[in-house]
Image 1 (cartoon, rainbow, N blue to C red):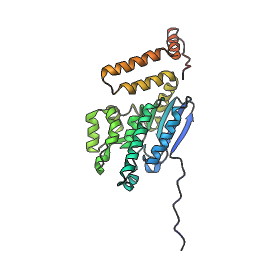
Image 2 (cartoon, one colour):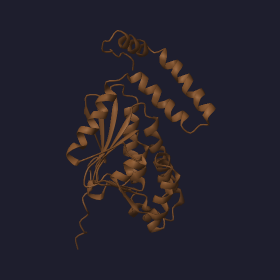
Image 3 (cartoon, rainbow, N blue to C red):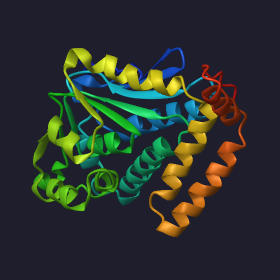
Image 4 (cartoon, rainbow, N blue to C red):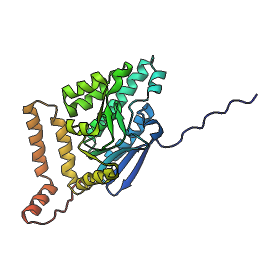
Length: 269
């Protein structure tokens, strides 16, 4: 008797990286499954982030997704298959947390391009990007409570965007919020129609690319360093960063350009 045929291996890249000038777009590439954050997807995204970190020609990163939705969160089939393997579960959440934090540690600003659903760890992914643009039909949720798995790790990022009461509402009810609510709550920066989504993302990236890379690099790091600190320490951190920033060649160029009413020519990397 012939052996049963095996399903063909899916050799498509999990994350697609494309360049347009100084903008790198990283696209989650399992759209038929709403781009679940499996362990392998997390590792693939981490590898792309790590590569971008040391590439001075990358000035901004766009995080996008294929298919009908942005990201449905962790791969429940994979999690269920390893339900009794505590070491595997710990590796999943450790690696996911590291990947999420690497978005804020990346020198370049990251813009989320959100369409369709962004739920659980997918909602977390949006919250950890520096900026987010959503189509007006996008929806957001922390629905883990509905299946007995409280969205504790997604709450870390989301609660730092929307505030405690609103985060707890999402966590305790599992309810979906629409794009306009996400905008009002502070989870996203802009809500636009589908045909305007790419143009609005591009508006952000064009502005970022036109600014001093050196100043943005320093400023982004200082923002995340100070935001969770007590007020006195936050001002110390921010003040020291300002001292370093003003000493940059680009700062001198920017101030001179402003004072002489001419366009700045940025040199720093």
